[in-house]
Length: 280
Image (cartoon, rainbow, N blue to C red; front, side):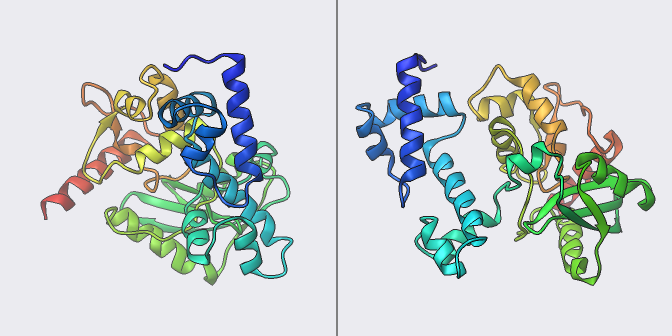
């Protein structure tokens, strides 16, 4: 572990300000040189202090700047370049799949936001897909359609929840297709906010291929926090995007199924379904 001192933390805070104020993201070498550290040591120190890498921090800041600029710039192109992306394809590539609900919205339980939803059936029962203007904020399973809106409302207690119309048909069809064939590509914007640690866990989960299983310890080691096994389990429990963030692929160290927010039986069915798809 890199040794954290007040001086080293101050260096990283200064680097964060550098990233935030730069028109284009500075390179690791530039940041390390400004701190008078080697790139290797600076990278380790930055991740230790901030919880994410310098590149991840820069990407997150650019995405936030992009969304903010969309509300103030006269054209989307101006917003893209003012955010420092350099091209529209890069901006949409980085922002499309961000976990993007702002922390202030999340802390306020989405107060003032309108969340639309659509409900459909699948082989796991009933599924609700809830969306804001930014993207999908929740995917939940249930045994009957009547109970599902309350699950979303509980997640975002101060949001205005209303049933969507035909405009959500293709969206929920895409989600159901992904549930049925999880190895397929999915091009859907996500709008969900977590802590830096939760995002690291969720990103690690999305790297686990269909048909595979990992333990909480495996994920903890993968994100560089081998002692944070319990926190990994809590991050899995906090997941709002069933299947897209595949927390069902996490099992106990002995291979036995552990808890699942939407029921252990659904977890078993999902793992069995993915295993069968691999055998076809």
